[in-house]
Image (cartoon, rainbow, N blue to C red; front, side, top):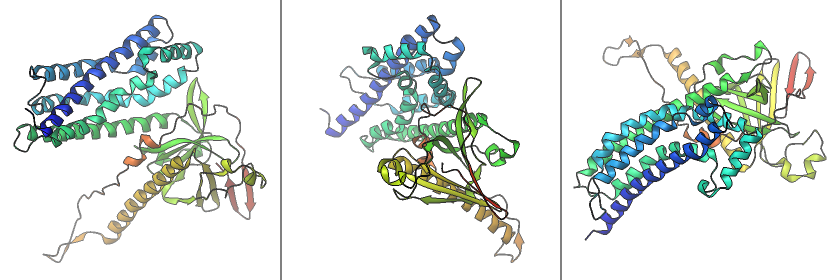
Length: 412
C-alpha cells in the first residue's frame, strides 16, 4: 500500500516519463509529416528545411535514451523507486539544445517568409486541417523542444516536493535541479545573444551617420515588436541594452530587414511618458482624436533631446498589456544603464579604496556590477512581425525650425 504522498510522487514521475514519450512522438511527426514531404515534393529546398528544422533530428535519440532508462527502473506494478541518479547522469546532455534554440529566431523568420509562397501555405494549411496535427501548426511542433526544456525544473521540483527527507533520491533530485537550472540559464543567455545578432545583421542604415556604437556593442535585445504612429503607420521598434532603434520593416534581397526610421536614441537620455487614453491626436486631426476612442488608446511617448536636435515619438501598442510590457522594459533598461553609469562615476570620483587597517588608499581591483534581472523583457515582449508592412515608401517627417534648434516629431 502507498501513502498519499508516495502516490503523488509516483504521479509526478509518471508525468515526466509520459512527457518524454509524447515529445518523441511529436518530434518524429514533425519530420515525417512536414520535413520529408516538403523535401520530396520540392516545396522547399533542402537548405531551407535544414535552416527551419535545425538540429531537431539529433534531439530524438537524447529523449529516447531517458525514456528507456525510466522504463528499465519501473517495477512490474508500475511504480518507480529512484529517478535521481538517472537524471543526474542524463541532464548534462541537454547542453546540445544550445544550437537548436539559438537557431529558432532565424528559423521562425524564414518560415514566416516562406509562408508567402502559396505552395508552402497550401501544404501547411492542409496539414493543419488534418487530424494528426491536433490543430497545431508547424511552428508549434518546432517549438516543443524549447517548451519541454524550460519545463524540466518544474517537473523535478514536483517530484522532489513529494519525496521524503529520508529517501536517498532527495539529494540526487536537488543536484539534478541545480544542473538543469544551470543549463537553461546558459541556453537562455546564448539564445538571447543569437537573437540580438540576428536582428543587428538585418538593420539597414539610410546614411552612415545613423550607425551607433551602442548597437554594435549590444549583446541583448530586451524587447522588440510592432508599434504604430498616430497615422496608423506600422513601425518595428528594437530596445537593445543601451539604445532604442525605430525602424520600418522592408524587403531587401528577398529577406525581411529593418530600415532605420530615425537616429538611434540612447536609453540613458531617453524620456518616457505614459499617455492617458485620448491624449494623442490621430492623423494630425483634432476631430479624429475624439471620433474613434478605440484608436487613441494604449499610447506612450519617448522623447530625446541632444543639443540642437530632438526627437519625440508617440507609440501605440496593440493593447494595454502590450503597452505595459514596453513601459516596464524601457524603465528597467534605463534604470540598469543609469545605475551602471552612476557606479562608474562614483568609482572614478572616489579613486582607490581606503584601507581601514593601514589608513592608506589601495587599488580597488576588479568589481562587478550585478545587472538587474531582465527576465520580464525577453520573448514575452516580442510581438509577431508577420503582419508588418513591407512597403518602402518614404516616411512623413515634420521638421520645424526655431532659431538653431531643430525638432523632429515622428509621432511613431
